[in-house]
Length: 232
Image 1 (cartoon, helix red, strand yellow):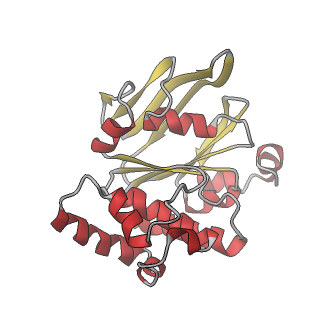
Image 2 (cartoon, rainbow, N blue to C red; image 1 turned 135 degrees about the vertical axis):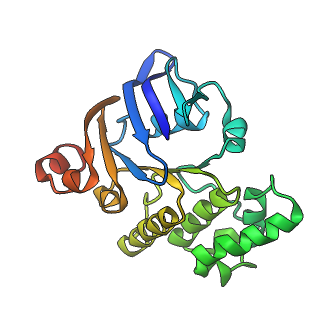
């Protein structure tokens, strides 16, 4: 179980997150949704250790990991695929994956690359291509695959559908469903309400506060909620 409890985060005098609590049971997909400026990405960064909360705590299996930095949290099994993909454009697909698996020894690295490519067969066809030559959807797949290289128990995805065409967005969400089948807990930050179709539970944020949460299918079916917070 991953949990964020009563999290408050600020950037200087600006309050970004105001008392948000979420839970991600083992093997589940939870989705944090809301418009721009809602506090979604800041909440995710607080979980990842990129931002330090000024109040509240983050726990993993009951252990307080709030003050651990990103590298320590990675070693604890929490991996982040950041917004904007941030792949190494001049590196090949293979070398991007190697960078993601830098904590593994050589034997484990090769085996893990083969496992990840089974999840993303398109990457297997493009292993020697520069990451920057891939389409937007393929680059997002590479960013997710790179985050999976360390075999995390918790995968954090920050707006993976941002800027993608509808067909690529669907492919990303299908990939999230495949990752869940392998038992990985996933926290998915999105503006696109279609993310709820692959989630177990949803949290809707607005102006740094939690406004709604509930089973993902119920939230997806609430048209008034989607119009008010998710753009329809």
